[in-house]
Length: 154
Image (cartoon, rainbow, N blue to C red; front, side):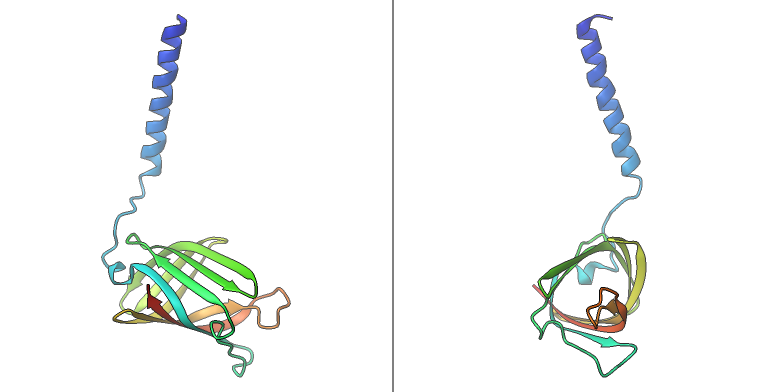
């Protein structure tokens, strides 16, 4: 096989391999989810109250304490949630689905887990209530919490 022919095969070979990879990666379609459509967009928290399950008297509103929380929801149901609090950032990436007034969030990053929240939507205001975790005593270990989010669409 001459050098020109070898280069042509290499180019075609890489094109074929690339096409196979694209087809394999594209098997799980990421199209729009009509149930998610009303929630699509960027949401900023106006209130984020975390109530300690162990001591319900402890219920800080992180936004009032200077935190920022943004939730981005894509038409496919993919989401990114970012919390900035106490000079630290926490990012969560996953997929959400909607059934009735319940959102189920399957987190893929930083670790895999599933949680659910009851939601209500009124115009550009979204409210979420569900189980969560928060390091109330700042010892590096999150404790069970009940979360109440009030979000405003950007």
